[in-house]
Image (cartoon, rainbow, N blue to C red; front, side, top):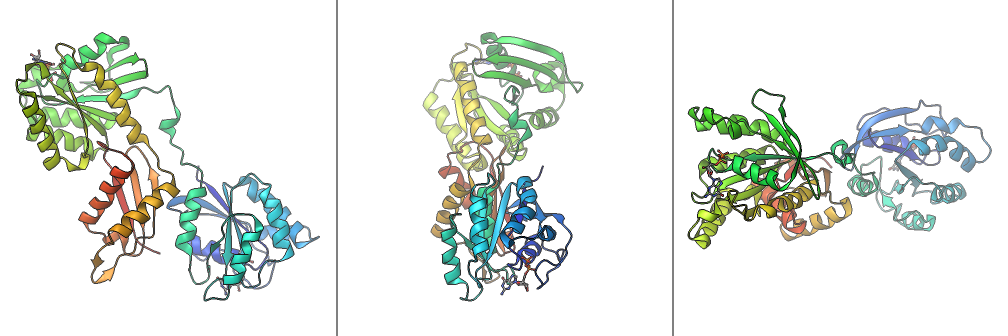
Length: 438
Ligand code: GDP
Ligand code: GDP
C-alpha cells in the first residue's frame, strides 16, 4: 500500500499546478476559473524519495456551497480521511484569507499530518505572506512556486519526514525466526560449530527435508528467540569434497545466503583468512547480508595476538565494504567463546534492520556534504540536496540533487563510511543510490 497524499486548499491557490509538478505530467487541468469541473484523480508520483499516490481533490470543490471554508471542508473531508499526509496549499501572493484561517483551524483538529505549503513565492512577492503563514499553527510553511519549480526539493525533504514509516512485511512478524547461514571453506569447522550451538539449545525441529536436494533446515530457540539455520550442502556432504572447492563453496554459499539474513563466516584461525574466505565474505556483502566472523579453532592457535593482527589487517585492506565487521574468537570443539556468537549475531542484525528517521538522516547528510563538498562532474558542480532511507535490510540510502547520478565512486564511499560511523553500523553492507533531478 502506497502512502496517499491529498493536496488541498481553496480554489486557485495552485493545487493542480503542484499536482502536475509532483506527478511530473500534465494530468490535472489547470484553470483560472475557480471551481471549474475537474475529475478526481489518483496518480502515482514520487514524494520525498518514495512512491506515493497523489489524490487530486480539485473536483470535490463542487460540493454544496455555503461558505468557501465550508465547501472546502466538505470537499476535502473524504480525501483527508483517506490520506496519510495532507499538503495544505495557501497562496502567498494574496496572503491569508479568512477561509484559510477557518480551514486551518479545522485541519489542526484532524489526525492526519499536515504540511503547510505557501505557493507562488517566486521572486520576492510571496515572502511576507509566507511569514504570515506561521500564524496558522500548522508548523513551518514550505515556500514554493509550483509554477516555476522553486522550493520543490524542500517540499520533498519535509514531506519525507511526515510520511508514515515504510511497511516492512518481514519485520512485522516478531515470531519469525532469525535466518542464519553458516558459511566457510570445507574443514573450517562449520558442522562442529552447529553442533556446539545446538548442544546448548533446545532443538525444536529438524533435520527436515529442505526445499532443494542438498538443503536441510534446522531450527532452535534460545533466550532471545528462534533461530533457523539455512544449511549449506557443503556442511553435510563430506563425499562432495571431491568436487572442486570453488564449486562447492560458491554454489552452496550463494543458495544459503539468499535465504539468510545474517551469515556467520567460519574461519580456521590457524590458517587465517585467504582469498577463498574473502570471496565468500564478498558474496555475502553482494547479497546484502549482515556478516559476523567466527574465528574458529582458537584453542589451536599459538600466538593469538599475531592471529588477531593478521585478520585485522586482511579485513582492513581487503574487505572495506564490511568495515567494522564483528569477529568472535571461539573454539567450536571445546565450546569456548561459542556463547558470544549469537548475541553478536543479534546485535549485527539489529543494525542491519535499523531505520534512521529522515530528519536525523538529513542532519547527518548536511554535515557530511558541508565537510566535503561533492566534486565537479564535467566542470559542473554536483549539488546534493537531501537524503532518504527507502529501506533497511540492508540499510539503503538515497541521495538526491542535480547531477547526483554522476557522483564518483570515492565520494559515494565517503558518504557510506560517514553514514556507517555516524549511525554505528559496522559489519553491515550499506547501499547508496544517487538520483539526479531537482
Ligand atoms: P487550484 O484551483 O488550486 O488547482 O489552482 P491551479 O493550479 O488551477 O492554479 C490557479 C492559478 O494559479 C493558475 O493560473 C496557475 O497558473 C497559477 N499558479 C499556480 N502556481 C503558481 C505559482 O507558483 N506562481 C504563480 N505566480 N502562479 C501560480
Ligand atoms: P566443516 O567442513 O567446515 O563442516 O568442518 P568440520 O566441522 O567438519 O571440522 C573440520 C575439522 O576441524 C574436524 O576435524 C574438526 O574436529 C576440526 N575442528 C572443528 N572445530 C575445531 C576447533 O574449534 N578446534 C580445533 N582444534 N579443531 C576443530
